Amino acid sequence: MSSDDFKALIRLTFREPEQAAHWLMAQGWPMSVRWMALALAVSVSGLLAWVSMQIYGGGEQTQGGLLAGQQPLVLAGLQFAAVVVGASLMASVGRMFGGHGRFEDALLLAVWIEAILLMVQAVQVVLSVILPPFAAIIGILSIALFLWLTVQFTKALHGFISAPKILLVMFATLLALGFVLSFFAVALGILPEMPQ
Image (spheres, rainbow, N blue to C red):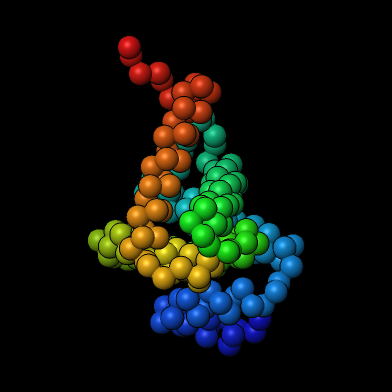
């Protein structure tokens, strides 16, 4: 992909996200390229998140006792896992509702969403130094952008029509996932058990 193709794809993603998703899926890139793209995206994102933490003075030590120098790798690892889980859910839950999307394409679309959010994150880090109030606004807009792109890409992946239904299923899936993860967190001692 040339730099012109990359810029055109960014513009297309904001104008016609479903077309951008279909273009990405039509490229036929091998899984190794998709995994490498994910590793690159989350590595840069983890580094930017660490820089942002340093700017706001929260990078001395994490709750788990990790030193600041180790944080970018930890953040990248967590984000890597989150994107893979998200792509798995995008593919599997969609198929439960009659879709036909594959994990390979869901992973590619999730990586592209991560890349778009990475650009927004870079702008946010710069604004956090120059104009801190605007950085907070960018943070809120990035959440809206994530939801919008995920819904549009899910439509393209599975051939769905209704965006509100996809959004509703997304929220239901996140609630169910949070419920399941809370049990694992309690079992592993990460969260305390609720008093009887």
